[in-house]
Image (cartoon, rainbow, N blue to C red; front, top):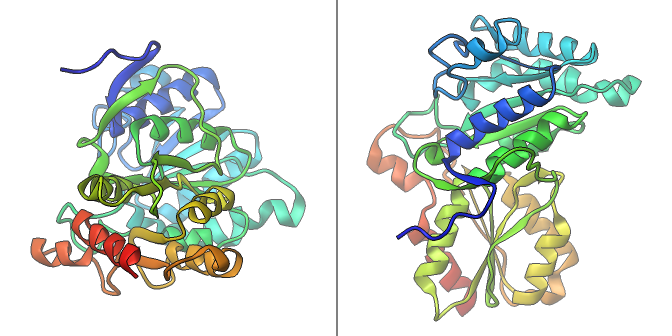
Length: 332
């Protein structure tokens, strides 16, 4: 039986929380508008996040675009420079590469070059596990974490999906907001109603523990938590949900690893040169004396995301693989 609901909250899916966050901010701030392919009318985008938005906010604030990411991301930058706050939907994160130049060459460098703010957000539905093949399953977050001038967030819960979206829209920097597609309709949770912004740059402890620290974000937080639950009480694993990839909450990571002495870093993106590599390097530099085992990294294989179910399962980390890495770390 479901427990008592916290006051001022509503149970939502991850997808509903994103939609609720957009509505909340569009009702609060008339400078917020949406751009994307098929986001208007009854269709409401590929995942129905913006269904009904055009009827409420009008076509001047819910703008259907052609299939030209470079063009409409560039247009959003112009809008942002003139005082608006565009939220751009790229139907799948994979398609963000089409607008790469407008993001990394122009929007990301504008404040550095002439101190102008570019307050836009790109909503990028990412991740696989859904048998969608190599063009609809990628996790390209490392490209943008590597780029000065951008902020990058990746919520793992419905509450944070809304809270980080509100914070991203209000931020005066360009923010890439990675949505985890496997969580859209499979994960539900209590979401605060109204204004519930979550600060960018702050990790959270998703599960407390004392023997090993598991660091992750997006859908892999769910997998990591499941692995930790499987190993309890024999192994007490602490799960850190990064939430923000840039800026990275280094202090939260270090505090946990100093306590446990071990670290496992997990992400669905390719393991090579991923966020896990940065975290592992950081721990090697500043927490070496606290480590009782090497930092273990799990990530996708260095191949395009497979379409075949069995091959995609082999490509992606899962709870069983994370549990094995935790055991190896603890027994080192």
